[in-house]
Amino acid sequence: MTARFKDKVVIVTGAGAGIGRASARAFAREGATVVAAGVRPDSIEETVRLVDEDGGTASFVVADVSRPEDVEQLVRTTVERYGALHIAHNNAGVFGKPTPVADLDLSVWRSVLDINLTGVLLSMQHEIAHMRDNGGGVIVNTASNIGYHGRRPGMAAYAASKAAVSTLTRIAALDHIKDNVRINAVSPGATDTSMSLRPGETDADRAARLATTVPIGRVAATDEIVAAVLWLASDEASFTVGHDLVIDGGVTA
Image 1 (tube, rainbow, N blue to C red):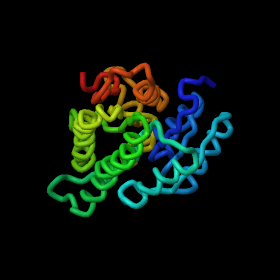
Image 2: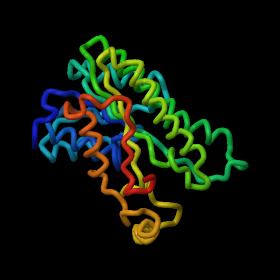
Image 3: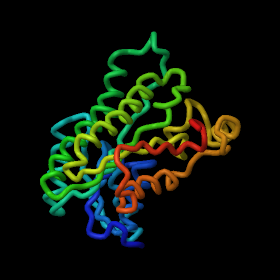
Image 4: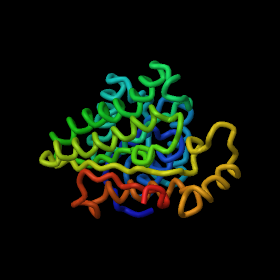
């Protein structure tokens, strides 16, 4: 355990699995008090249990980031429990079923954008409202390298939403740096989570695919993505504003 985030209160959305769970555990290991948010109570409860096992401090709030009232309650509950909100990692996201653009159902398009894009907007709005009235804070959003290269046929909704998160991050950063709210993003490539598996694909299949399509030749570990999140959230990145850090093993180089 280190103390880079000692006395800091951190919200992590999409904390029930993958990068979000790894982020919650990493912030807690470095001294933060973490609020794990997600839509599945069993998953975010498991994240809290793992944080407890690590020796950290965490609790959970069930929240759907596409619902304004849920996001408002998440921030309000966090502040009521712990007296502050210093850092947020807005990570919640969904892929949606791969579908060619011509066949993409509007309800699927809206659902993906509601969670991946509007969810980030709503989260930032409520987080910033607290932070700017209480000395400032730091926000890190999860975008995706797909927003840069687009080479995933059938993933139009996901790619569009993540490209928009990257742009939204830059504009929000400029809007609110004078409020002492510092905002950046990370754009992971293929990471060792269920979301990086294509339909019917095994871990071995994915490894074989990435060996030829990713210059570094492998999938990222969640901790490799989270290391960048924590750096952006730390004082070490105090001069980094409105940046989207692409972490994809060279795919977009």
